[in-house]
Length: 169
Image 1 (cartoon, rainbow, N blue to C red):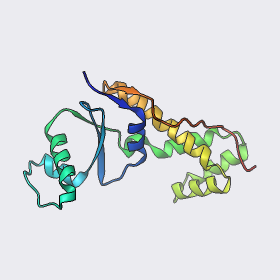
Image 2: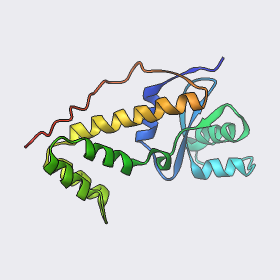
Image 3: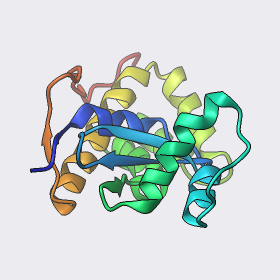
Image 4: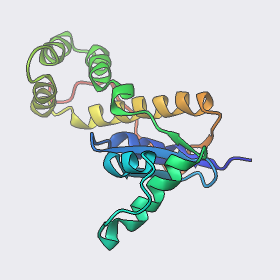
């Protein structure tokens, strides 16, 4: 029987995504593992031994296990997460029409992510944004688990709730 994964581990991996790495769920242990794309590519190409610093040896062994077995499932990438859509959903959820319009304007055009974050800071809405984003990532993880036939538990995650209010107005 496959191991149970903590939903918080999946969410943590979704929050910490980089272009140079991928995260996987080990179906046997329930652990989320992250490995560099360079090492994963070398392992998939069948490289046996690389001249690596000692500190990278464990990651290389992990990359080889991922490439050679079916016990690892790739977690959603940042392209599956659609950060911009989460920002749009958050903006549309704001009660104040003035602030809602300001946030929606911020996410269009050049510098959308920077403008959005700047607007959040100016409006003192960062905590609401972080709570909303975490809820969205948790839902992505909850939807992903059954698709992959993965059993999950929600223990160990701090509970934060999006208030939907407009602080600082």
